Length: 239
Image 1 (cartoon, rainbow, N blue to C red):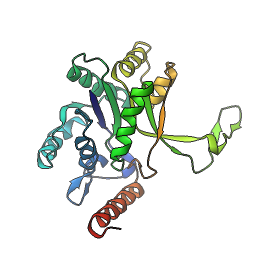
Image 2 (image 1 turned 30 degrees about the horizontal axis):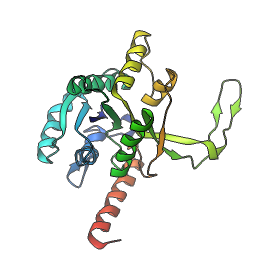
Image 3 (image 1 turned 180 degrees about the vertical axis):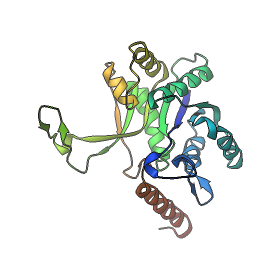
Image 4 (image 1 turned 90 degrees about the horizontal axis):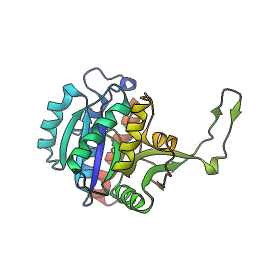
């Protein structure tokens, strides 16, 4: 069983939007979160979707799911106090839905990353089957500078990758890591691959599309709008 856990719990402070969080911003009559959910809903190997949502916006999301006929969402759960706790809420809902089925796989994805591809989802599922985890990455196109507190370290660019999403795991493994973190009072892991690395799990990776951006700033939204227009032109005009 392959379950997507889509995180849509952020308030989007860097977007400077007044009326709605970034995942519910509208483009061509459709919220950003729906563009993302449709990718998983239409994928033949995704069995179910769990959405972690800002609690006051859950009724609106439910209406949008009906309007756009997104059918694989089996649970909508409220977010927690931190991103880590929000993802944990989603994983617990996935665990409940999977009902102890062995080998369940979970793909953790941001609701504001609507530009992944069907191939990226397929590659994640295949990599988890191969080695137990999959981090979607892109090659670094600029130089990283790491401030260690004692000086600067500059890794070679050819060896540097940028982690994006989905980040995918066996459901039992990622839940075990979350529960260890909670038992230790850790609530500040920035993402799932950081947590899994901290607890000693071997991480597999695949290279995803460069356009797999996270819509965090107004500039990101304009890029997304342009990419949607490009895709529409490809369908209509064949270029």
